[in-house]
Image 1 (cartoon, rainbow, N blue to C red):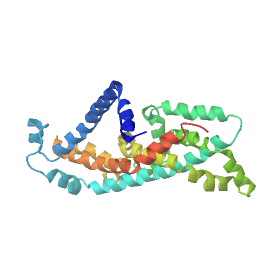
Image 2: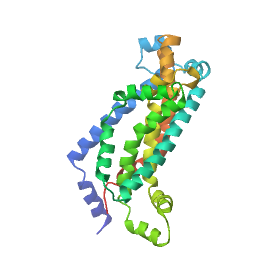
Image 3: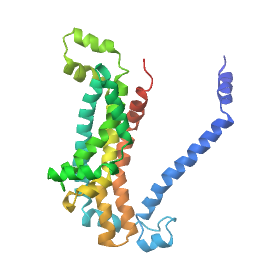
Image 4: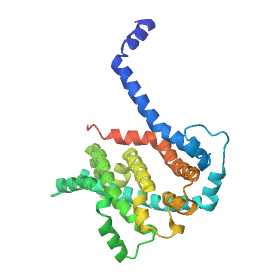
Length: 285
């Protein structure tokens, strides 16, 4: 078959339905990307310029908003606090989640299906419904106004999704690999750490990325637990803008830009792993 015929056959596959899908996805992308562009362009304006013309491009780049955010609001201290909290959440959520997923995926025992159902059902419980008992528990443990007081609830909130995703992935791993390790004399921990975990890296990367993003963006928990400004994560600094600087929309936009930069960076670096981890366990066999 000639190259011209092959090209002609490929062109025929493009249909009107495909055209509408591309149009819909393009419009959706615009509605998603434009708010970010709007925030970035207003981060270089004064509050008066934003109030008068917020949808126009800035005539000059005003860096004072970023200087105020970095110097006066100590934005790098907020980055450090967020890194401590989110990094700890990722580490412990992935570690304990992978252990629980290994048990649920590779062992048969009474109550296994009930536990899996409870794990999935816990995803339906919002953090707002549990904050009162969680607060009283942390208060009795003297963990209010500490990073640990934020880390522990966030680990608990991330575990159901982590367990659900990793369990689905581990169930697709052929049992022959595990049996071969047992024949070679490997115990359960060696099978988990040397066979299961290396194969599960795509799903682990996915759960770690989501755990980091959820923890990094969780303003509600830090707003309730953290009281000292020196311990504020970066998203908590947003609440300080209106109280200290009035309604400074330019500064607000600058802080938002500084907050979303790490999120975009993490997602762009891990987007391939996220897609691979979300789809690898979709088909068994």
